[in-house]
Amino acid sequence: MLSMIVGATCYAMFVGHATALIQSLDSSRRQYQEKYKQVEQYMSFHKLPADMRQKIHDYYEHRYQGKIFDEENI
Image (tube, rainbow, N blue to C red; front, side, top):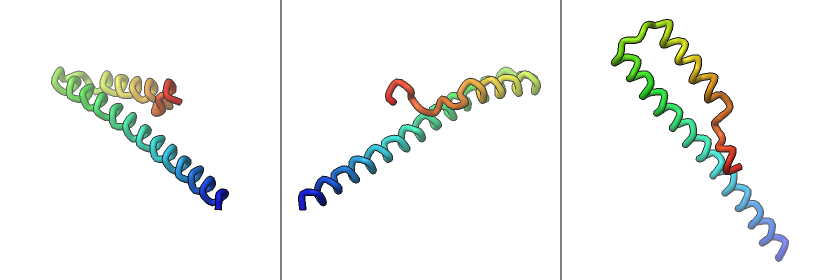
């Protein structure tokens, strides 16, 4: 009986941590999308040329590539 309780507790902890990790991933992605949306609005407002917009887009893709996780919390 004790082993079932310990097993259920470990399983619940695992599921809880997995859920928190997925929520963190989604939160980081949402923050990136909001930031890039602001950049797009800025570029539209100032009517930047298409080649410059592409360079800025490439910069943001490179800058935030692999930065979905908050390394401080891990």
